[in-house]
Length: 88
Length: 88
Image (cartoon, rainbow over all chains, first blue to last red; front, side, top):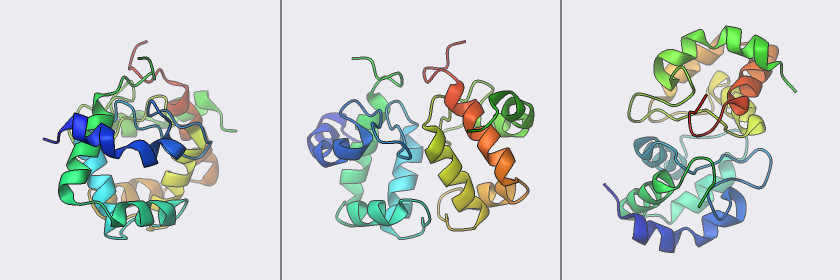
């Protein structure tokens, strides 16, 4: 499993769209807080591999392109660890 | 926007993987409870159009194939209306 602390350090750029607490402020963008960790890994890899298209996928393809497998694991651990209701 | 009550009626098949309360019981499957409504619409359409691949996407391509735009709107409204922490 990933390192949530390391993921937090990497997540600053994600917050612009997905919210500081993992609750997206922008309609059409998914909340990530409390999401299933394995699903987050799978999704990020699918974006990185350009297997996900449609919607805003092109943005995430670009964001995920620079992430290592370790980065992906850490980010997934971080967002999975946040409370799903956005509370602190 | 969709009709959450109509979405609920259509969601029985979704619950097998995504949980009765929208919290997935199976690792690797996303929670849907409290997710952004527009994102859910966008995702379901991307699966229906086979724009999403990788991970377990083939399963969702099949599930979404039979959904009308109205079904998609209703399902998105339903899952977006559920509490993100799975509470009743």
